[in-house]
Length: 69
Image 1 (cartoon, one colour):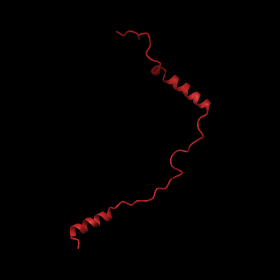
Image 2 (image 1 turned 135 degrees about the vertical axis):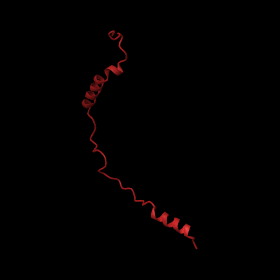
Image 3 (image 1 turned 120 degrees about the horizontal axis):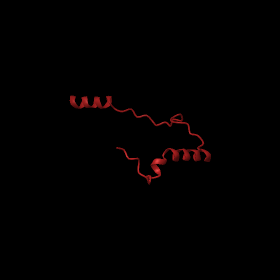
Image 4 (image 1 turned 45 degrees about the vertical axis):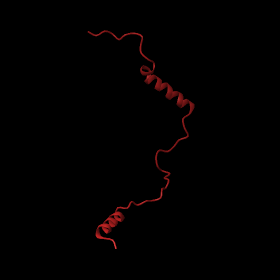
């Protein structure tokens, strides 16, 4: 026969036992996938990124900035 402490622990364990549900794959989760980018889209993206980050990826300039007093 269980004493009251063990019975209480057993009741708490059953009360807070996690409910496990089987995984179901959701088809509507996330963004809708498209066919992908065309070659023209990739070319335009590359050109836009190169123009936007030209000052970062092209290295340092050979000339010094103007002197400030």
